[in-house]
Length: 128
Image (cartoon, rainbow, N blue to C red):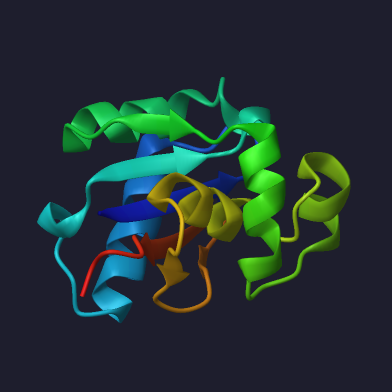
């Protein structure tokens, strides 16, 4: 399973979210079709652009459970004070990708920042 974790400022556009996902995947030599799901934190559950990106890509948008998000946070490679204070995790995109990808998941690299959107790609622990 491959998951794109999404973090953003409030009120971003679907175009910005899709561009961040595409940029993150390209950084790892991957295509959109490699993704199994999008993920984000409870703080972003009402962000319309993230839901719209899921619909545009025909992928589920999974809201990581707060407890699982906290358990995944030590695996984050990036640190953002704003994310830490608002979401309780050093990186919404990285922690949510790890949380949704499941036990043993790993990030393919640090999050990609594209304007007001961050995207991190995680692969499940059972993936090669």
